[in-house]
Image (cartoon, rainbow, N blue to C red; front, side, top):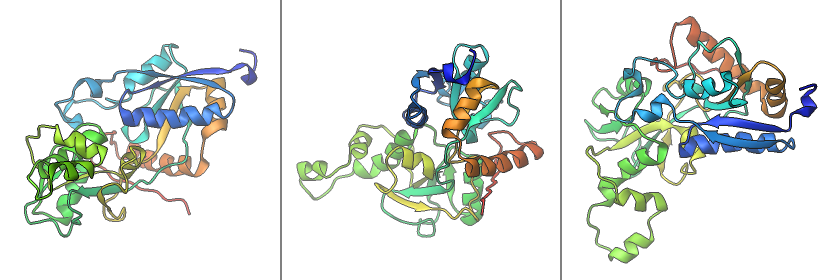
Length: 286
């Protein structure tokens, strides 16, 4: 192509989960405002294929990232949209982080079915999380807690939390009770759950982008005590260095978010940690 003005269509790789599609959709919308035709192409990753194993036990990094980036490296697609916290620090040298849109909240949240805070959970309460870091920080604050693994997309994790309490009997008439349920609560009624959770812990950004923040009983955990994962809350768009990368940068990059996440990921790399390491790093530009 002779000039950047000649680029009028982009094909973006994304995972197929509801949250990933929402994130990619936000990038698509921002690029579309520059009169670009943007197509989203779903790609299944290693992390998507292995649903019954915790990510840190797979013995690899980039389980949700590498399959997407390979499509870009092979020239099949123009760019890939990632949750930055899933990205390993050893990216292929041909790829650049072309765009970092404005970051969402980096904090973690605790979600309970009844509005109890972390301090109010009963002794020995069961908390679900798929993150080693979150589990370690929760136990540092409450050594009595029982941490149980919990994988799945945001909706699935919330449904697993809500299901046991929703499936108990209530004094109200069934129709009145059912009519007052939110859509996610109705889906939870249909779910078989092996483990009953008193709470779950997950990223505030994921809950927000799923449209569930404020719809549930959630408590933001102070990032000074519950330090977020490097890049948590941020989206990254990777591309081959060149014309398309420059176009994406001009259209969507948010410099403060890029600075914060670059600092966090640089420290992570210096520590020798990957995207599954139980490390919390949070930079704030002031």
